Image (cartoon, rainbow, N blue to C red; front, side, top):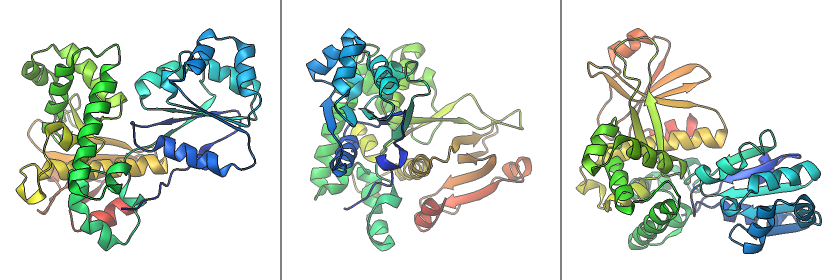
Length: 374
């Protein structure tokens, strides 16, 4: 299946600013970067990878003259997987300050790792671009073709490599390898994560609870760990682009739940790989969770691509009234119910408390109209 990224480096690159491209491994950061570099025919370009020991040694020494000599001959300096470079933030600051006319581009598979290294040194000196799995609006073809592949999106997700795979078996192999090598091995390389079994168990717990409020105490009891450790592991999973957290929405009612959270997976395919379930839609008992995860992520991708600064929540009261997703855009609220086949009805209490809000039910018949237009 063909697709075309709407996010492009040439749109966001700017003088006196480094560009930092975030996103999970194998999401297409290097492809996007190399495509941009290839098009710069009249520019002198340096492309290096963060695991190059010479690059790591250069930045570790933090010697300004050597760093400037490294960048001086080039119009564009690109460092792929920059989270692997010690002192990358300070070194990048030196380059940006000395050569404001040059383009400095960094990519990173871990916002946890890279953002902590560039945070203070590059304050006010960088823009960011976050790549997520391919959005429905980025897929080529007619609406008929896209809708005809809906089941595949729900089961196998939208990683570029998965979309390009020819068979379901190939998609499954790619996702299983992605989860085992990236989700587990890469995350376990972080100092804060010590136990592979605990990481796997926590991730599986979250996968089985997509669309539901998550209790850290309940997960801690299930995986036989403490709440603080569970919270730390979940925080790392979010910063490594595996899950996305949303909180409860509360503004007017005392009985609105605001302290709990839901967690969605950034990709349906990785979620299904975590629990080892790639069965056909007709055979599954988790279609509601798959559908809600898919709808939320499409809304979120659209917000990221459009840089719209939308905020997302869920709504639930202690008396059991609930709405799957609340989208807040420029102060305006939209309550969104995700229903695979049934008809959704707006809770009267929501309308009573938030009379100016909009209500939307997204199902498999109208989803393209709603997701592409919002």
